[in-house]
Amino acid sequence: MANGGKSRVTNTLPTIMWYRRDLRMSDHAALTAACKRGGPVIPVFIHDKLSDSLGAAPKWRLGLGVGALAKSLEDKGSRLILRRGDALEVLRELVAETGAGAVYWSRLYDPDSIKRDTAVKEALKDDGIEAKSFGGHLMFEPWTVETGTGGFYKVYTPFWNNVKSRDVPVPLSAPSDIPAPQSWPESEMLDDWQMGAAMDRGADVVRPFVQLGEASAQARLGHFMGHIVQDYKASRDIPGADGTSNLSENLSLGEITPHQCWHAGQRARHEGKQGAETFLKEVVWREFAYHLMHHTPRILTDNWREDWDAFPWNDDARSAEVWAWKKGRTGIPFVDAAMRELYVTGRMHNRGRMIVASYMTKHMMTHWRIGLDWFEHCLIDWDPASNAMGWQWSAGSGPDATPYFRVFNPVTQLDKFDKNRDYAGRWIAEGRANPHKDALAFFDAAPRHWGLSPDDPYPDPVVPVDQGRHRALDAYENREF
Image: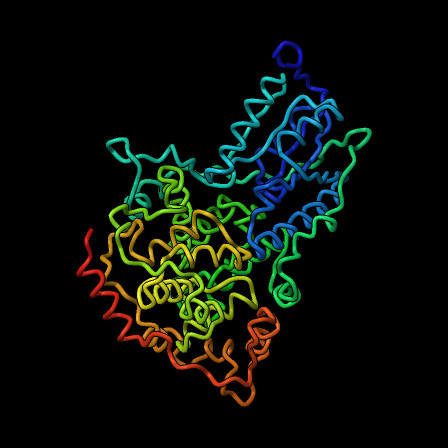
């Protein structure tokens, strides 16, 4: 234990700024505090087992984000030091190399991150190092939102009513200066980590759809507020239109904060833009997902409603039906279009997410965990809390007051939200004389071993809509839970 466990913090010792899913400089409480503390600031990203365990698309997107942050820091006269290994071991090595007196970072809320960060904080404090975590990934810390009886919220609407009038801190400006040390510690090379290796040829297909980094995130928010938010309440349900913010990609890695989105939405609301409140509710829906993950972490792995454990799910991830779903070859155009959008862009329209999840869990009677795991592999905007809540909401096993018999009909949903078949036409090539370029791009993004071709005939439904609905409802009505 260094110095007998007593803190050796002074205002001249360096501060290590440990970056994780907060790849920005503005509205960054930890970075701001590090710069105000006095002494040099050494930004660090550690490629540890948690980041290494990410699925193909989120790991690739994280690598891109880390690279973009490194460039932004260089433009500020700073650097991002890259190290690979166990987080605590790396931080201790950096403290020894730099003489740092403090390590700051932004909080994360999934169980694995909490376990890691708690151990890091305790060990560093025992070493005599100031170890401090800051908010920023959420507007409201999950433990600060309580019901009238002191419990946590299990339904969204009361949660929204609780927080909608709360003060949200005004976003912080980026530091004007990030003090640099006289000499920098050694850094590994990002390319050596090969964070995009599992994407294979899909990386080249998805890359044009990525809006990378803090500046792009702010531009995306500005475009949305200037051109889309007015009609957002209706346009967000039209998958063939540019009617959403698309900010989930940037929020997932902290290239923008919910605080920044909230205050922009509030300004739009005060300006009379009708869709602004709906947007604010979506920002809070993300907060609600984290609220639930904090209080009931089983939502990530097990049925949130424990009485669903007896439901007769299909658990075979290699069944013919599941493979058809993964390949975008279910014979249900809305489902297939959405899955192909996922492979080409790395994201999926929210209406599409509901449809593909409902079809898998209801019509195909397949366990939501199989879909959750596949999304974790394929989404560049993957978020642990939102992904889990979305899948359990669709499956009926999650925090949802609507009864199980809500089974989305993917045929009538397409008729309602894609009347002109703009969305289906953009993503499905089979049977079309002049397929859209994005529909053809799917065959470049899909794994070669799938053996798919745009010249293939479009398949018949693997589970006809009416048959699947009846099967699901029969299973529900005859359940033993």
